[in-house]
Length: 94
Image 1 (tube, rainbow, N blue to C red):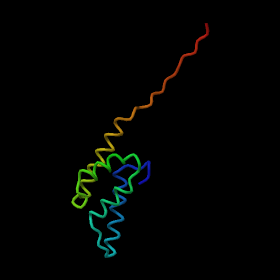
Image 2: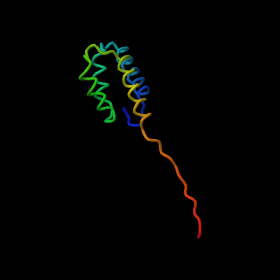
Image 3: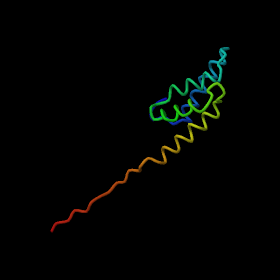
Image 4: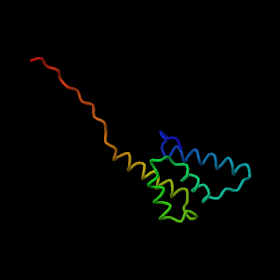
C-alpha cells in the first residue's frame, strides 16, 4: 500500500489482483489474502494490525470484515489529526 493511498483504493487493487490470479486457475485462500494485506499496510496501521492479530483468528477473518475494520480505523485517525490553521498578522507602524 502506498502511503498516500486510502484503504478503499488499496483493497480494490488487491481484489483486482486476486480476481486475475483466480481467473488464471490458481486457488487463493481468503485467509492468505488477509494475512498478505495485513503485512503490506504502512506503518501508520501498525497498532491496528497488532490489535487485529491479537484479537482475531486470522484464518476466520473475512476480507469484508477486514475492509470494515481498516476503513473505520482510517476514518477515526483522520478525524483526530489536528487541522492546520493559517494565520496572518497585521503589520503596523508605531
